[in-house]
Length: 180
Image 1 (cartoon, rainbow, N blue to C red):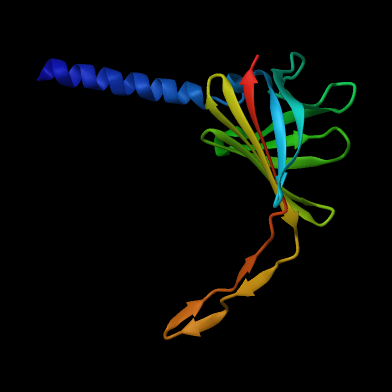
Image 2 (cartoon, one colour; image 1 turned 90 degrees about the vertical axis):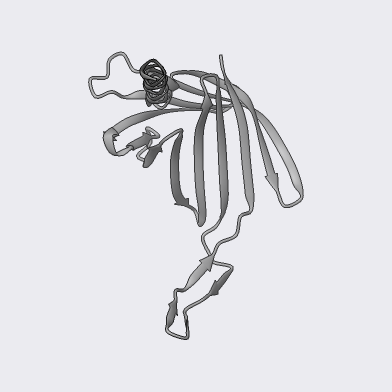
């Protein structure tokens, strides 16, 4: 019985160590990730473009900054040389610095990096999910910032029902990226 418990404990310890390494961010995310970004609306797929995400430690950075470059098509046609900046990594808080006065808070939780923002009247949620050592899934959900419906805000018996606003989704983008 002791041998079985020892093996089980060793297996569990190995799993937790592997789990910790799997989510070690951004170190375990470093590399070039390539694939095809597919763009959808209510009618279906409307476009696709080759996409690359470049994540590399900046050698000169003493603060733990990383490149976070996005390439749509080619570097010549659409390259966004952003940087990933640590704010409070223990709490999962980072910033994506677009190097043009736009700096957006981003949040690393488990296998995902999330950034949620509003720009020119559109709500946008970007997610990057590392699904295994060689695969990252990038998704964007967007729609207008104007609610399409408001429900609730009533009382049913003794229960106060909160107001709930629903926002439209007008575009969905998804890329399965493979580490190069």
